[in-house]
Picture 1: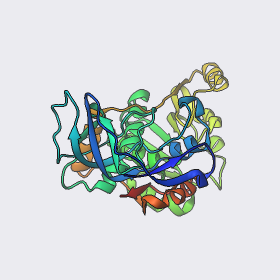
Picture 2: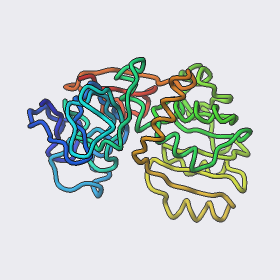
Picture 3: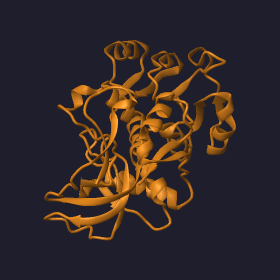
Picture 4: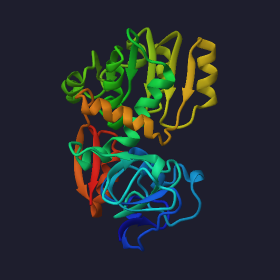
Length: 307
């Protein structure tokens, strides 16, 4: 099979197109022929070595979001059979090998893909969608709350905005002015141009901040009794200490595989209440371009690799 492999950490140039043996599914696993693979900021950060403590020695095949067709099933698998279309985010944060023509994945980390959800959007949804869903659950976002979403036009942000609106929240979202019409189309009540104003000083009385960019100064926007969830990295002790002093709950979160959560997202998509924005679709061999675009932090929606 073709795969994108990196023998070491480094820049996009370490990503190489190689031929490798097709993996063999173990017990409770399925072999998926990948049709599309999603990309996420964690992909380029992992490649660059920012989370090297998560992984052992190389070589590495990055990528977690996959959508494709079951080729074969391992012992004990009863929920899928060859020919089934499936999608999911297997193994995260362990290596899943998503940038490849075949992936062996735990059956429990995948769900059936309906015909009317194309493989590109299915591959774009799992990691970003589950992150958004899990942090909203963690923060207990509910109707009437003021919720501030950073990088609201990005992969996680544009989904978090819609999920917060689905719960009846009043949503504020940060983005460059060029993306404000896009944000309004998603339901954002107050788009904020972070390049033009000091967001931390301009936005008062927020109930929940969903922070994907490490903007810890946004703690100042949260009212006492509110919540700040940061998911770009771990929860720093300094932020936790400052939050405790301000009477704010500070939480960190790392997304986890969740088939039931994927099913919830799929239900919203099928009902027309969740939109998945695709910024670019690139061939597998151009994954380095995808990483370069992701690292700019200015991508609207998701970048997907087509196999």
